Length: 416
Image (cartoon, rainbow, N blue to C red; front, side, top):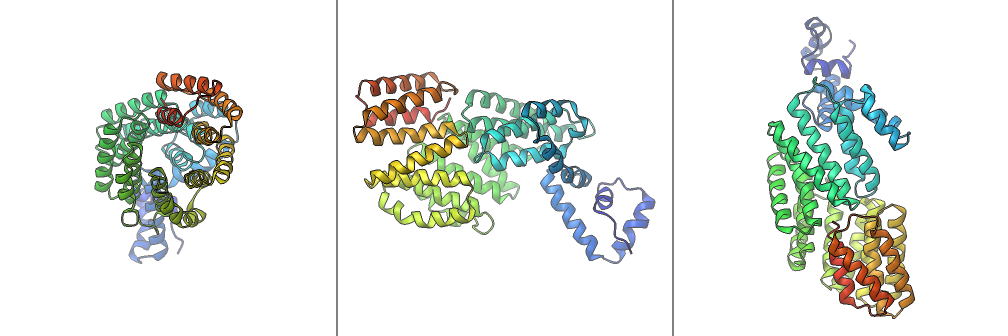
């Protein structure tokens, strides 16, 4: 007896298979409790969940074709990708939009420029989806597309445009009226990251709390783990290092290492960062081998670059200045290679502090000029720009202090 295809079963589950076809192709297998068809059913459930839509036919057909569609798109220059996303109706599918958002989320910390391109494509495609899809669900999808666009803009340092994207996301959620808690949670947790970068800490905390409640309501352990780490980072950014350390010591209880190895590694890494910022360098050094091993198993390349940066900070704190300088310069080059210019500038400030301590004024002057060039092309707020000018002038006049460098680092972390 021939088994029904995955597509046929999806049509049946979506209620679009003709009655005669159901009797001919589906009913005999239901009567026999066919294990092959049971496996097909489980696969359809998995695909539908990944597609983020309750319609089984969308989950199977559109989601399965999305990787090929995106693969063909990304062979083209980005300007041509955008043109086709606007004009080619074959690309106007829910599955491709959802797939773009998934791929955006996967690379946003590793390759933020690529994430930004995918988010822009998702927003364009979502704008052209037809009325064949439920209007409320479409608005939720558009809200998520705008949120991912805002998050990618945040990561590359474009905070003003990120703010605009989140306003659009919230407008779509308000209009959708679906009560989709998961979509709202995703928007809230990414907007919380924006508020944290803007140093609007109280708002960030409120957004994370709301997102965590919604993820818990939806039974989403991945979402809960993400927000747990963001709340820990919030304590750290608020300079409440004691609270951040206490929070992050709970990582083994809050994040299942077997289910979420990368998030678990991130939690332990953040504990390492908090310890080094709290000048607990001996304890940080003791924790370092464990984090290095976790990163060998679960981290992405840029995660390892950030770990190398922290290794430099620990070495600096222990007065191993040659080790620290080697780490900082290596990290500078890696961030530049990956196009993460904002992080490259921040590690440059750590290097500036080291050069200042050693009285290497000519190198410090060159570094200050490089920082001015980097940030002149970024959306940096007026106060930070003024501080950067003062820093460059202080370097030229050979009167740089650790306090000035620390103040500049604090201001530039606002990114907007």
